[in-house]
Image (cartoon, rainbow, N blue to C red; front, top):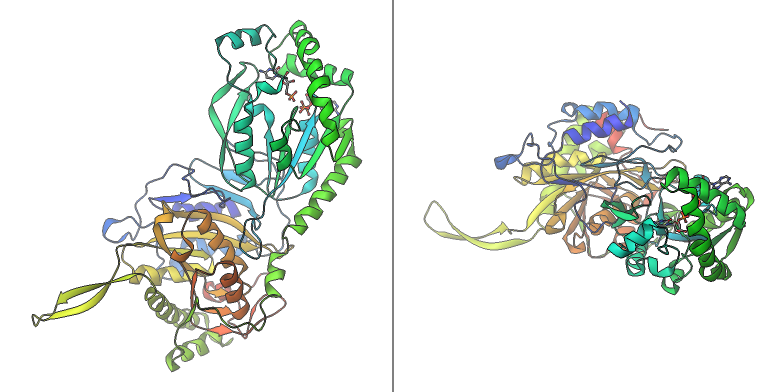
Amino acid sequence: MSVPQFFDSLHSSASSDTESDVADRNDCGDSVFPDTPVSGANGGENGSMDFCCPASPTTVPHQAGWKGSQSRSPRPRRQRTISMNQTTTISSSESIIRSHNRTIYTAGRPPWYNYAGQQVEPFVIGVCGGSASGKTTVAQKIIESLDVPWVTLLSMDCFYKILNEKQHQQSLNNEYNFDHPDAFDLDLMIDVLRKLKDGRKVEVPIYNFITHSREATTKTMYGANVIIFEGILVFHSPEILKMLDMKVFVDTDADVRLARRLKRDISQRGRDLEGVLKQYSTMVQPAYVNYIAPTMAHADIIVPRGGENKVAIQLIVQHVHTQLQLRGFKLRETLAQSYIGQPMPDSLHLLPTTPQVKGLHTFIRNHATSRDEFIFYSKRLIRLVIEYALGFMPFKDVSVETPQGVSYSGKRLGSEKLCGVSILRAGETMEQAVCDVCKDIRIGKILIQTNQITGEPELYYLRLPKDIKDYHVILMDATVATGAAAMMAIRVLLDHDVPEENILLVSLLMAEIGVHSIAYAFPKVRIVTSALDPEINEKFYVIPGIGNFGDRYFGTEPSM
Ligand SMILES: Nc1ncnc2c1ncn2[C@@H]1O[C@H](COP(=O)(O)OP(=O)(O)O)[C@@H](O)[C@H]1O
Ligand SMILES: Nc1ccn([C@@H]2O[C@H](COP(=O)(O)O)[C@@H](O)[C@H]2O)c(=O)n1
């Protein structure tokens, strides 16, 4: 099964009220895609479970395909342009498939936050220059050479103002000045760029040069590792200038610009020779002299000749790489070397180590334990730790009458909504226990894999219950080593507006370092585990540990 097929099979087991998202690019929990109501296979009383709770590993069809398709084994990141619908940001290095109701990364989204769990601002490059100087071409060359998983390209053209009837008539006669700063909706431009810098989702107008108007639909964009903002007056507004981390001016001779513009406007923008020349001489060139050329002084780099200037593009790319590195790449390594020897945080709750719990650990930690025994004893331990975790959910006082007609003062889970979210794939092994103890619970899934080259966690797939912000979330992963994957999953939940204090991370085994990483970044997240191990090795495995829980549980080969 290929990776996309695997994702398809994941999706096909989903049911109503789930929300899939671009991994989830911090879109403040808005529902991006329409819901796809499908009845859950074991949906409790109302049949509304989001995912089937597998009865045993062998009954889950997609797991058979995992081994061959999982991305833990080294493989080059895919670099390709995927044809997508209009709501998609397209760049040659962006690897996202978005259909009407879900989003899948064919290459994962790397961390968008630092070791403290805080969002890292995207690096914003402004590309300015005269019309047809080659701004878009330069931007595309930068994207191609950058080889960064997630780049958003935004054009100033999207912010042309809506014309009134008189202005529209002028535009048809090539008499409306599209090159004056007043032609742009600056407020909207600032708002959109600010939101993208904050890593949030935005709706960007789509501009039609033939009709001189905005399309009825908009384009959905998201904050990214790198944002490129290009346009003739990108350096004009001081507010925009402040938001640009790097300013590139494309300096191409006026006669070359005119020649390219003639060709382009006639072939692509529905213009005629006379009209282009009239507009150029009366408005485009004067605006270049008055408003655009003076802003060259703001540029960090001036690129003569545009896209064919390979040396300039390479210099830009090198600088961006250095800046991205400084902004918090190498997250897992940083986590692995931090917090050694510090006391355990109050947010950690350890399942009491009774002889029974110790006995179960003895079975699952023993390398000689067969797979069926491993599954059997793991399930028992999972059930215990999940029951223990439930004790940290909000309970309320209730009184019931016993068969003897006597009142009994007890407790009942509050009316707060509860959902489980598993970090695939090992966390999936805990779903059944959560479904067994919480009737009607919804289950979301987050697929996070380690990039074998960078060592960083990457977000590949996301499907969460709708309105997850209203839920208390039991986040499940079988083992936690550096905490990098759990941190990513928590960041996703926070980006969906789940309150930090409503997240409970449950695990069978955690390394002390992982507990510290999570507690430092997210002090309000409660952490429940059945055992704490002191170390991790150079491959980020917990020591003494269990080995690769997923491989042992699902019977798959260890990846290289
Ligand atoms: N180096 C080049 N040689 C030839 N044509 C080019 C070159 N760079 C850009 N063009 C063409 O010129 C036109 C304008 O280029 P573009 O990059 O879109 O400029 P801008 O974004 O500044 O308007 C496009 O049709 C493009 O294909
Ligand atoms: N309806 C419009 C809007 C804008 N223009 C011209 O587009 C130029 C900016 O786009 P570039 O890709 O060339 O940067 C600008 O010079 C406007 O004159 C237009 O012709 N019609």
